[in-house]
Length: 254
Image (tube, rainbow, N blue to C red; front, top):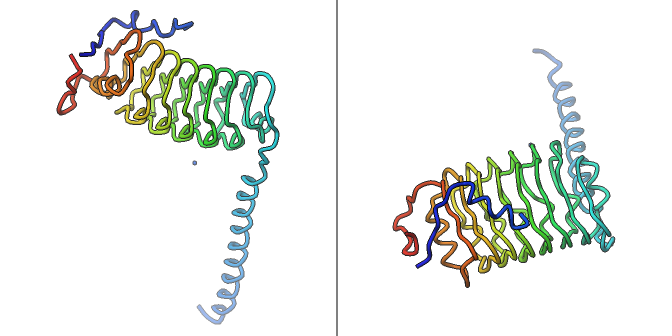
C-alpha cells in the first residue's frame, strides 16, 4: 500500500527546496449591396490569405539559438522565429502576450523553461513541436491559461515540473505524452483543476510528488497517479485538496 503523508503547508513546500479573442431605387441599392458584398468577400479572402501566409512565413532553418532568452513583450518572439532549439534558458513572462505562434519550430530547450506571469495568455499553442526540456518547466501565475494542449509533444523533462497558481486551468491533457519528470512534480493552488488525467503516460518521478491546495481536485486523483508509476517518489505530500469524492476510492488511498 502506498502512503500519502497529509502534512502542513510548510512541510509541503519542501519541493520548492529541491534546489528548490420605396421606389425605383431598389435596383440600384441591390447593385450597391452586391458590390459591397463582393468587396467584403474580397477583403475577407485577403485577410484569410494574410493569416495563412503569416503562419507559413516561418522557415525552421535557424538551428540552435545560443544562450538564454527572455520574452517580455509580444515583439520579442520574432527573435526566436525559425529556431529549432535554444541552448540555454527560455523565460516567457509577458503580461500582454496573447500567443506563442512564432515558436512553432522549437523542439528543445537546453535549460529551464519558465512560462510565468502571463495575464492574458489562454493557451500554449505554438509549442506543439517541443519534445524535451533539459531543465525544469515552470508553469506559474498564468491567470487566463485554461489548458496545456500546446505541450502535447513533450515527452521528457530533465528536472522539476511546477504547475502552480493557474486559476483558470481545468485539466493537464496537453501533457499526455510526458513519461518522465527527472526531479520534483508539484501541482498546487490551481483552483479549477478537476483531474490529473493528462498525466496518464507518466511513469517516473525522480524526487518529490507534491499535490496541495487544489480546491476541486480530489485526493484520490493523486492515488491513481501513484499507482501508474514504476517506482515511488522519494517523498509524497498530498494535502488540502478536495476530500475524496471518487467512487470507488482507489485501493491505494489510506
